[in-house]
Image 1 (cartoon, one colour):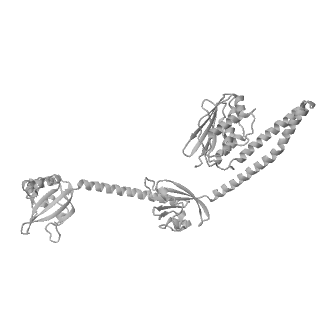
Image 2 (image 1 turned 135 degrees about the horizontal axis):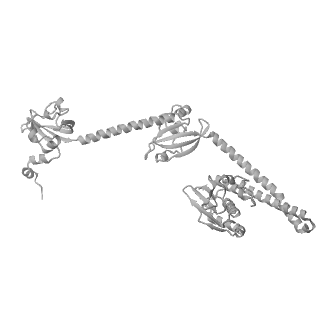
Image 3 (image 1 turned 135 degrees about the vertical axis):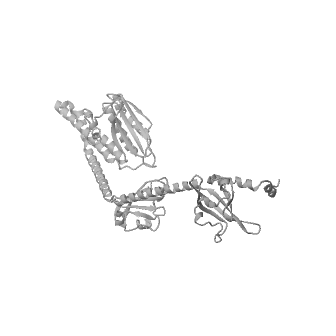
Length: 486
């Protein structure tokens, strides 16, 4: 069916249309007296049509209308749209409006009046003012925070800079200026690192995603080594800048190099001495056993006791030298390419110590253990020392021994738990030192090197070793190791 608009308009009076539109509307004659006032105009101003029609429009106290109405001003081109103004509501408060105005003409083109259409934007205006105030207040807060941060950074002795996503430096502190000069506004990789393009390992993309990145870098300009901590700035879900803090670690790196060299020399010395001393011990023990076997009946009691003492002392020295060789070897082995089955290692150690297990009637339980990329021989040394320790000092009192493991995001933790006499709190840190043995070790053979080897393995793999009290009594030895990335 085709819609006949002319017939529809004829049947649907214009008055009805004007009274239903959601826009305030009034008509004025050439004397600016109101000739028509619709329902939305009543709602917006509070004045009914009966109160408004016939009155001069200035009763609305329009601003800026009272300063000069532009409706019949020939200098103002019609129609005029989007004018902002306000009028006085019947109840005394101001109503903010946006309006359009135009002239009304008769069929001969003569101006016979004007029309104004307006919309109440008071609520929108209040929201806008509130939002503008909140933005202004937050801007002031951010400026204060920024000024405070800059003041703190400027007082730091570490060089600091801030750069934007386009690599342009937006702030440097006094320490940074003293080294690089006034590089504010320059490109960071050019001004700081003398690179023609973005640095190969630039941390900016990671930092802008919210991560903190720590890098070491040698600076040609100063001849120093720095640890640079790159942080998101401001600290928010979507940072826009990167904060870089330079920490001079030149002396620390030199000390680390000297310490590594000293450790290498010490390990080499221990290894050499242990090997050289072990060589004469083998024939010494062999000859003692030969004398005991062939000539024991020809010796008196003192001679036989002396011969036995030679064998025992030489054997102890051999064990000590073996332990020292093991200690010296830690850190010199190559990291395996694949993870080692740690539970299988622990089970092999248990078989190796089977005689001691049977002797002590121990009940050893091995739980699932996380695998790691650490040389199998070191894992053997670690579990051998810990399990032998539990068998020697705890199993006679309580045969239960447990080996457990835990895996975390960046590390693993192994526990060897016994239920023996435990270790006094004042001795718990000392037992990991070389040649230091606890008070409970009296009458138990040992060299005092085994737990020191465990602690060194932990340190080499960026971990630590400690002892805790087992609930209900006993000692729990804990070894934590950093994961070696696959």
